[in-house]
Image 1: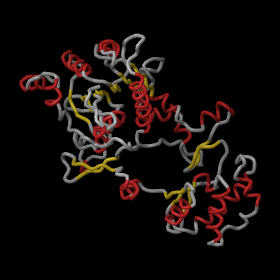
Image 2 (image 1 turned 45 degrees about the horizontal axis):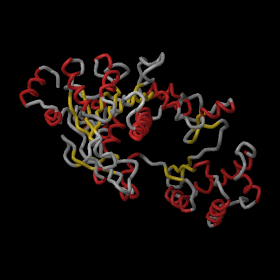
Image 3 (image 1 turned 135 degrees about the vertical axis):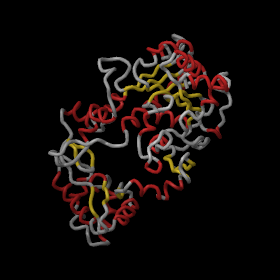
Image 4 (image 1 turned 135 degrees about the horizontal axis):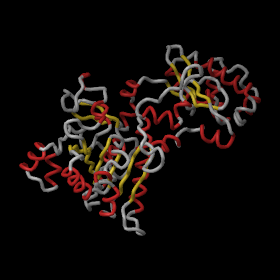
Length: 424
């Protein structure tokens, strides 16, 4: 780590990160937005896989037009490099020598087989953190299995818990490359832990972090594992609510303005004070029914499986109440008495949320080949003493070749020759 780390530049300013492969984009973005200097290594002419993923600017595909790529590659520099060539492997080795962290999602042994992977380079740089993100880990009988996000969601377990009340319908896949997001979040946690630990004193080598996306996904199945491990029971998928061993009443309801609201837990409060406030609100609309009966107070503190009849009565009464209101009235009124209720939004509704605007969640910048500015999701956290920000717009393919490779000592003529030889 260099010594010019300043709080104004982000909590990770001064760290140099090298990212290679297609499955570490979110990890690289999180590090870059927090101030680290991130170099993304891409395939010459083709670029990384996400450059081919839509949506595209103007609905026209192109290596520099993917908004999916743009959202996950803020605050990075892009270089192209042919790692199948001996010279490309040497250049990659030189880039690693300048790095504090390598995010490697190229695949198990891909770089090792080219003599520029962690087997060699960790021993040459004892301060290096090498974070490998693969489908099934660097060891084990599945390590070479092919995969994608759909396979990961299925094998890991979340898909079986995601779907509808009607089990004649198949399970569904959570969209949005969840397996990348989940595994990359785990990877960043490991990287930060390794930074805190520092160099391994025992063997004087850097840290190899072996992140298995399959294990990350399998650890993120909420109640599925504990219900099976401790009770021998399987949860069942339900429409718009948590999977559960036993079917529970619906959580989503249409309001008078034909919008859906979601009531966590079916709307049943978790303490008597909130329940009293809810009943007062319902009384204003003559909608509380017999809910003031003490038997319903007792339900709040019981296991839902012990008195399902009374609990279902509470849910039915609350459901009838919210159906008589608009979605905004349900949302604001529920939140006003500390109930975890919300409207079911379309994705574009979030773009005008004043809460996110006040927290400066959205970042804007120009995007090449697009007239005007594009909005990007920002950081999901804030720091009181340092700024988390988009330090660079998403890069063009190979945009920083000249800048980065000149730092390694290559002249302009050298770069021209490297391009002619299909090295960069």
